[in-house]
Length: 413
Image 1 (cartoon, rainbow, N blue to C red):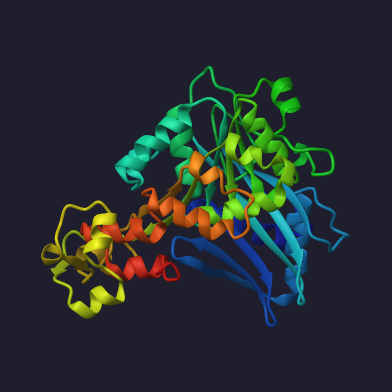
Image 2: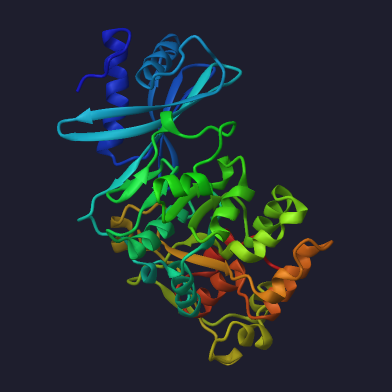
């Protein structure tokens, strides 16, 4: 379908940008005003890539055309949001549009809703890379009624893939799932429209009143945009399942943030509502055709703080003499995959740090210097940090030390 805008040339340009993103299966479009031209970039697996450039004089018209499509105020330069429903044949594609002013001009970010059909295969929880002992406990907790599971980590770390795999295991015709997150949709998940969401001033979707009115069984909430996290945790403590996103590095930072956002007299909510806090990253897998095995020297082991005690803490059945690592080399097979890093497989694996709150940990909530105390107590109880989980994969030959260092560079303690 033709995009309706201001002039035929601008309509064609906007049409070309959106159609190109759909054909390439790209889920983020960035349109920005530089000093010399208007730039369009697509976010792909290896980062943002420049795709189109236009003369500066066209930038304002492109922005206005997209804002009109998203039913946004074209006369305002304040930050604003909207939604575009773009149809092509029998398919409808939805884009969340976020507009912000910059020193050169307005900047647009279009995020496409990922629609998974019932027949489309999804990764199972057992395919994501979670340690078996952690996976068993996580699956058991996710199936229990009531409580909150929080997924955290930087952008692009795989949080939504983990959530979809979890929801896919829980999904049934008897379950009423409501989400305020625009990044994905699937039959059976009731995703609220951008224009009909509850604003922070009028209340959030994740509250007990809304849950009772709509008879909700499971909420998916973005805590980054949630005005009343305490109310969301009250809902979880009241017997409703809540899955939430947060953009922090590790579970202990999440606990710090929650204790700041929740009144001190309601810190009991953390003990009564939290089921698990999951932090994750993505690790590239070395190509099975060309990877090489090598024995580490003493300097390398010292650099990564690997000794007998550390191997025992990781619960690995090996001695220091048995240690072998793998390195990525590069061959014709892995280069065919189109991966930007030669020597690695196209599809990465996940590495997870999952904190399961216990009675011993909850006693430390609210205490001074609780962050360090909770972390030390958790590690003594067998908790594996992100660095531990990544190193375990390296010691088992599943990834390289370079990958471990790249995703856990500031976790070497």
